[in-house]
Length: 254
Image (cartoon, rainbow, N blue to C red; front, side, top):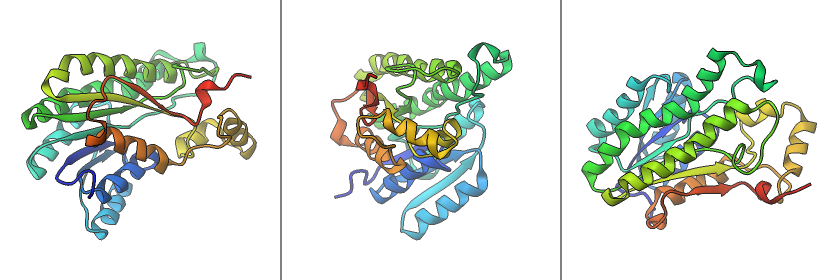
C-alpha cells in the first residue's frame, strides 16, 4: 500500500536536489502534488516526469520570499485537489560564502528571507488549510550547521536554518491539539547543487564526506525518504522534533 494515497502535498524548492527527489517519491507513494520553485522550466519538466509515471502534479513558479507566492501554493492545492495534508518546505540558499562580518545588510536579509521568513509565510497558509481537513504534517528543511556543528563563513545560513527549529517547536506546541504535526528535517552533507556550491572541488567534497561517520555524502533520495516518514502516518506521534539525517556528522569529533 502506498504511504500517501489520497493525500495532497505542497513541496517548496522542488525543482532540484532534495525537493525534486521528494516530489518523485511522494508522487510514487500516491500523493497529489503542488510543486513550487523559482525555475519554471525545471518545474515543468518535473511535472511531466511525474505525469508520465501516472502521478498527479501541478507547478507554481515564484519567489519564496514573496508571501503572496506562499498563499498561491496553498490555494492551488485547495482549489485543484480539494485540500492540503502535507507541506514540505524545502527551499533554501547558502547565501554568500566568505567572512561572516563582510555580509551587507541586504545579503543578510536575503538569506533570512529565503530560509526563514519563507517558511513562516508558507506555514501561515498551510496550517489553516490542514486544520480544515482535521490533521496535517508540516516539514521544514533545516540543517545540522549551526545546530550541532558550525563552519566559518556561514553565519547567515546557520542563523536562518537554526531559526527554523524554533519555528518548528512553537508551531508544534500551538497547533498539536488541532492534529497538526510540525517537524524539522536536518540533513547532513548531501550531493546537491547547493552542497557543491559550498564544496566546489573533488578534494573539498571528499573532505566533507570524511566529516561524517558514514564517510560519504547523502544522496537526495535518502533525505527524501526521511521526509516521507515525517509526511506519512508512520510518524503519527512525532512532532516538534529536529530530526537529524546526517550520516553521523553530529557525533564526529576530531
